[in-house]
Structures are given as C-alpha cells and as structure tokens.
Image (cartoon, rainbow, N blue to C red):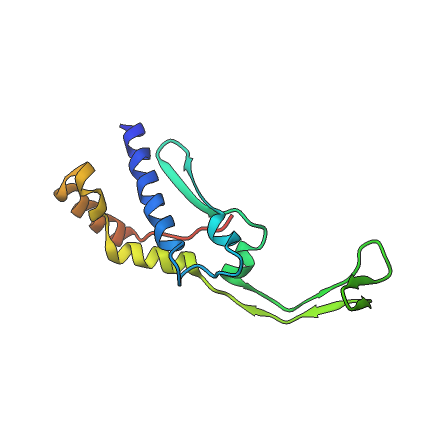
Length: 138
C-alpha cells in the first residue's frame, strides 16, 4: 500500500505544480523560475514540490533591503563603471506556491476519481481541507 500512497502523493504534487506554474500565478521574467519546479518522492509515502533556483524563496517570501559590497576587490564593476557598493530596496513577496495550495484546496482531489473512485476522492478532498495543505520552507 505504501507504493500506492506515494503514487497518489506524487499525483497531487504534480497537480500542485500545474497550479503553481500557471501563467499569471508564477512570477515571470525569463521563465527560469517557472521551469525550476520539480516534484520528487519524499520518504515512504510523500512527495515534495520545490522550485530549484537560488532566488525562489526571496521571490516567494520577499526580502529586506540589502547592500552589496565586493568580496575580493575594492569596487564592484558595472557596465557604467565602478562602485564601492550597491543598494537594493526591500522587495515584497509574491507567494505563488501559497496561492497554488489555496487553489488546490478549493479544487479538491476530484482529479483522482478515475484512479481512486469518486467516493474515495471526495473523502480525500474532505481530509485535505480538514488538515490543510502546507507550504513548508527548508
């Protein structure tokens, strides 16, 4: 039964990826963030959806203002010249994964009816809504 549970967890995670990467939901500049979403098995009966870019969490959660300074040299090099430091303002988060979880909670697990049967899919929907899907940060 464990293998089957993981199969369903992976199917739910794939559906969550569909919601997360929809046009208008995921922030889009060059498409790297959208393409970085990966679904993997987790443990014996779970699945994880993650966005594998170094900046995904900063985009999702936002970040405070930062000052960039050179590590090895005396100045930063830009196209327009050099600077001793560069300041970037704080950025508001864009929680596309949290929105995808909310969408999936509203939709329910009806998409699994062909695999599980309508009654089991409806019960799974009730269980997911009662428990609540969560966005965990690593």
